[in-house]
Image (cartoon, rainbow, N blue to C red; front, side, top):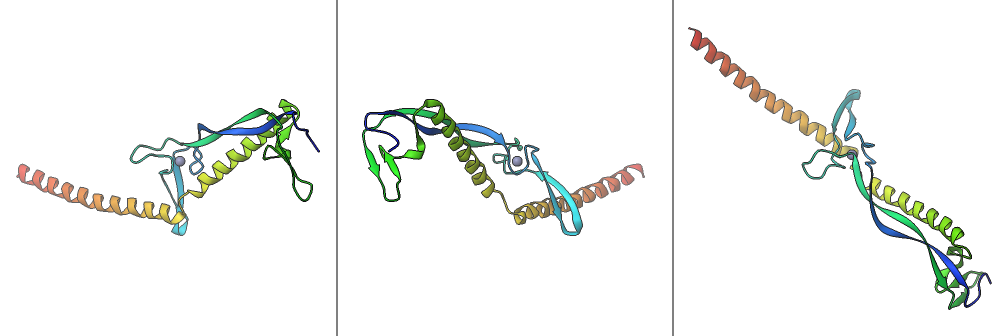
Amino acid sequence: MKFNIGDTVFHATFYPTTTKWVECPVCMGEGRVQVIYGGGKQASIACDYCSLGYTPPTGKVKIYAALAHAEPLVITGVELEAGGKERYNYIDSSELFKTKEEAFKRAEEKAEEYKKKEVARLKEKEKPNKSWSWHVGYHKREIKRLQKNIDQHQARLEAANLKAKS
Ligand SMILES: [Zn+2]
């Protein structure tokens, strides 16, 4: 057995509650996304992953960061599982250490794993290309529509100028 009842050990753990701002995984902090569509044409549009509602993109997103922690505890119970696995106070023996330093090192590993999972979770939320191409299509349609309006107003203004001159 790794430990005995009454031993003081350190549990490698972490607090997942701290919030932290990290670079947006979609635009890499640029705030804009390059889109390549039919015929290899490129467009750059504002990243709506890191913008909240109608505010401009910030290039940053909030994640739940993990704070490594070595928690001291006294062994009060031992469980021996089939296959030689040991559990103390319902905690797997691989998460318990004799020194605070060892426990903290493992806690930092766990915190790092948690952080990676958080970033992966953010990436899962990424919008598929279809959505980006929809955005490009929408902007192009809007430009075309507004350009038509501009042209009409321009033509009326020119007509008015001609009348004023004559
Ligand atoms: Zn972004």
